[in-house]
Length: 420
Ligand code: DSN
Image (tube, rainbow, N blue to C red; front, side, top):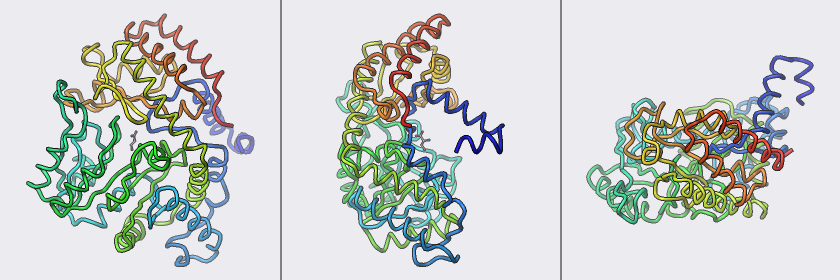
């Protein structure tokens, strides 16, 4: 495929080749990224990109959709098996679209919903004032526990969730986060929602692979609606999903996705989702997800030994959130991630609880292990990588240190190639 592009469009081919080299020669610690299998990549690059298929299986607006009906049905059946749910919509182009469709299906403009304080690990589509969810709906935010002397420091403050739910009577309570390193108590959310007549929406974008394999508790049957992306721990193509056990809600979500928000579904991506779901149904994917969690534990332990401060003190899942303020008060997330990138370690700056810097600067770094685990790395490599990160931060981006660490990174990358 790359050869075909090289012949027809050398400019783009060069960019793709350079990006391939970047991925091969750096350590990907962005918690929301992964390396998909060649089969997923091939399906995403297949002839299924050529077709319009508005509608759903058996009810399309165009002729010639027979094979597309089959692949969409296959993807849906595999999702149902993977997550143990009754209904699924596999058409959302992204997690953001999946979330927007749920809002459109379940709320009227101005309605109230609850979600976490955004700088505490939430997401743009969970009520940010610059996003449709925050512009058109009334977002009320619940905090984490900020008191470091408490045992539940850095965890969701469930008492506050209950208090705010009773006070504001939201239609929807959102749980599921983009920078939360701890297990989510879906039962607790369901009990709080039942007391105020709300529905619970779990956005499991980050932990979907862990949920599918039992490495994190399932939001079913406690949550009425579950959204996710397909490209993080689930290791599929970029895209979104909506799942539920409620037939009436499923019909609303289908209408909200199409014709409510989207036009033609990306059928090549739906085929790639189906391929990824089959991979995730294989028992080996369970081993992979358990290794992601074990690797995150090892990386967190190693970082603590290096003097890093982790929000909540560690991790239960695939990610950890480093608060730079206690050890390096002058170092921003932006600066730290730039130093690490120069050394070949790719992370992202992230806000931390009670953040005072802007989201573009931040005081934190988010790190995750899904992509490193895909390359076959295990606990010893996590210890080694924690050491490399610690050196860069402790030496405050000293150029000689960056060079030495870069050499160590290249060696690791050669030992653990990406899937081919
Ligand atoms: N951008 C994703 C993340 O990095 O967590 C969430 O959509």
